Structure formats: structure tokens, C-alpha cells
Amino acid sequence: MSTDLKRRPVLHLVPKPHDTIDADWIASKVMENIDKEDPGFWTHHAVAARSKVRNTIVRAILAEGSKR
Image 1 (cartoon, rainbow, N blue to C red):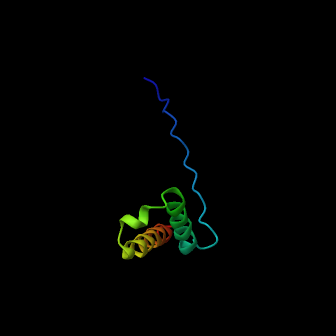
Image 2 (tube, rainbow, N blue to C red):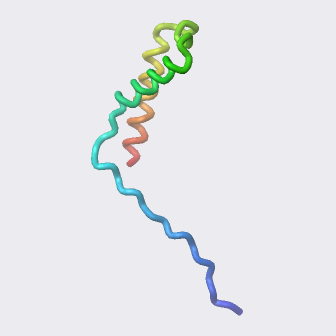
Image 3 (cartoon, helix red, strand yellow):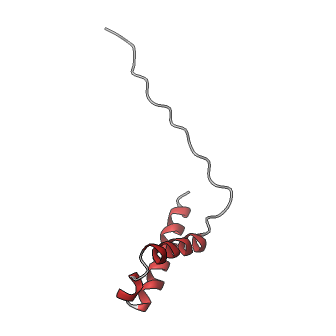
């Protein structure tokens, strides 16, 4: 009988970022990308949809940041 155990992979923890995540900046870059990639996107959606999409992006980024 062998006592040789299989080696488990070593987990390396990633350190927390020292600065805060700039959710507004990231959201603005995402919105700019939508504008660039599909210029007619917002003509097919309600005006309020733009702010809802941006706010959803910001909330998602802040939620991820709070997990760290």
C-alpha cells in the first residue's frame, strides 16, 4: 500500500487593490464603447434606458468591489 498522496495545487491569494475602483470612469468607458460599436443603439431604446444601463454598471462594479 502506498502512502504517496497526490499533490494538491498551491493556491496563491491575490492582494486587495490599494486604491478604490472608479466605477463612474469604468461605466463611462463602457457607455463610450457602446456608442462607438453601435451608434444607432440608443435610437432604438428609450432615453431613460441610457441612465438605467449606466447605473446598473456602476452598481455591479461597486458590488464586486465590496466583495474584496
